[in-house]
Length: 198
Image 1 (cartoon, rainbow, N blue to C red):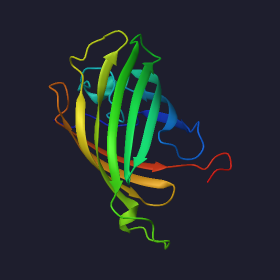
Image 2: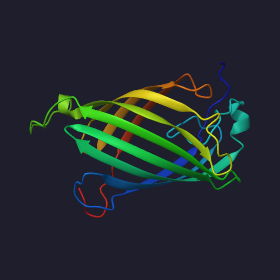
Image 3: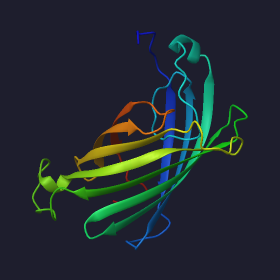
């Protein structure tokens, strides 16, 4: 594929709400995101709906704006050192009459080390986790079909650089005809302490 342009594609605002304090057998998190992007964005944080990304020239896609609202119910559990998580995703494009698109992700991971040693160490085994994820689209409220939906399986490696920052890398493999063959994801997250919580 030849190079056909680049540029700023927009911004996102994410919020996570923990309705329950402390640890429970299942820990729910409510996630809300608003984004204002153009269709030239190639970031695929979540896979929702159906159909592949458009590969029209970036200059053409940049002219098409999208304002989207996304909600997720995230459920996680810790079982004998393993972390299990399940997400149900709902996404609405506020700029077009596309209905509500649905998606999912499931994952399992485990720290590579035991309990923290108590000393400051960025490269200790307990700061790394490895796992496996599966995710994909589940159609929309308009197209109630699983044909042309994209689904992926991905090994994941995460590094908890500090108590508030995480670097995550994964290579996903498409498992349906509509899926991209490979998907490389690199993510860096920083959590802001709000409301006096640490």
